[in-house]
Image (cartoon, rainbow over all chains, first blue to last red; front, side):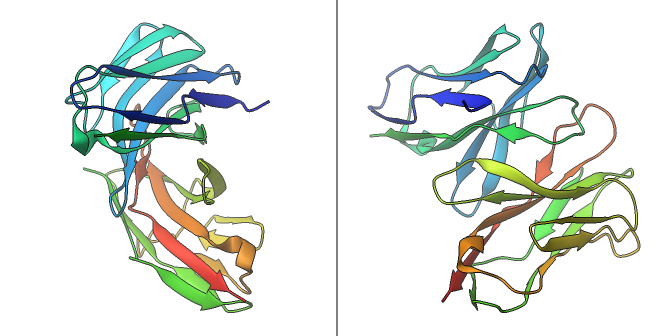
Length: 112
Length: 112
């Protein structure tokens, strides 16, 4: 079984809808991250969490929110989706901040 | 702030050709440096890393040497294969509680 899983893997939704992307990990890591990948822009950090009680904004947090329900679960929400949020979203975990990150398989989100 | 600049792609090579993907960085401290690879339809995975100056990371025939004097961490492979076709990301992590900073990625296509 994969160490970092993301659900759903693909999602098509309409402008204005609320969307939640979920991430679960079995690696026992405290640090978890949400990234967005767009062609030509690489990976951009949305939010990150050092433990259940610690949430931090990343480079592009506007329009997104997160919830760290447990050490193993970190969810990303789009309260009112817009077309320019169409992208590939990745969750990642690490044992330490300045350390190897382990990525999930990604969620491809399309907002019409 | 910290940043990573890597050569723009796409890079197209014939099988068995020599590969170099350039990566330079800007950091205030003494960062750890990483190369990640993303195969089609998958999340990123660590390819290699180096944690201090003059360290050489290596894996799967790929190598990169941490050059503090030129602030570089270029990725090389002596003989690429079709299976190396992927997107390659250079990244750094500075000291403290700062998450990884990624370059924009370089797409490599290897043709038989």
